[in-house]
Amino acid sequence: MIGQFTEGTVRVFAAELGSALGFLHDFGVIHRDVKMENILLTDNGHLRLADFGLSRRLERGGRAFTICGTIQYMAPEVLSGGPYNHAADWWSLGILLFSLVTGKFPVPPEPDHCSMLRRVRSFPYEMPLSFSSPFALLITELLCKTPCRRLRTLDRFQRQTFFHGTTFDLDLLQRQPVEVILELRERPDRAAKARRGLTLSLQPLKGFDYDLLLSPPATPDTQLDPGTHTHSAVPLPGPALALQPAQEKGPRREVFV
Image (cartoon, rainbow, N blue to C red; front, side, top):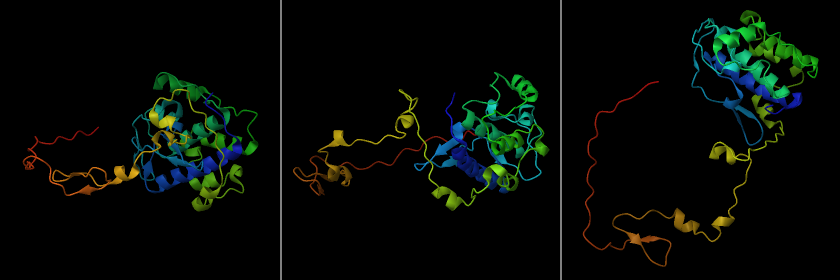
């Protein structure tokens, strides 16, 4: 289980992510790696789509063939090596929304693309009985295995019954309160994870001289005047050292991955 959200919360998330995909596609960009790890959460509980490392330019009507992305989020046409287009991003969004509500993926990930493709093609994608009819319809249209019949435009996405009464105006959408409770791991993988949702205590820094920290740094011709928190032009003992120009480095090499 990866955690679960109510359909009400997911409705706001879906509207924000759908708007992000629509924006990218209108500018001729396909993301190709829509997944939970690439979704950022703001301090007020709203979402941001991130990590464009696998993105590429793809105009409307264009086709791509590179197998890339995260295997459990890949559309069947991506797993098979293409051709595919922007519709693949909407499939990935369907997988993500399904997972947010159920806490699990509709199809367990396989170790390789061929095995995953066989599972995806044979899986019936039956909607759980806990889904409301509007949400089940949305997921069914997003996870359509035929790209040309799949829900693949923002306009069609907005007209879904699931979004009845939901605004897609980004300014208004960002003002809607979203209550998200995150549970941190006991030992987060990275320091950044440990800081999520935590308030930094300044008690260990009690008595620390912030004025000293923020004062301008000493130069070779100045020293910190004892008993003060500012720098004065007091000559340093010993001969002045002339600054030497940096030595020329070898030719710069750039590596493109």
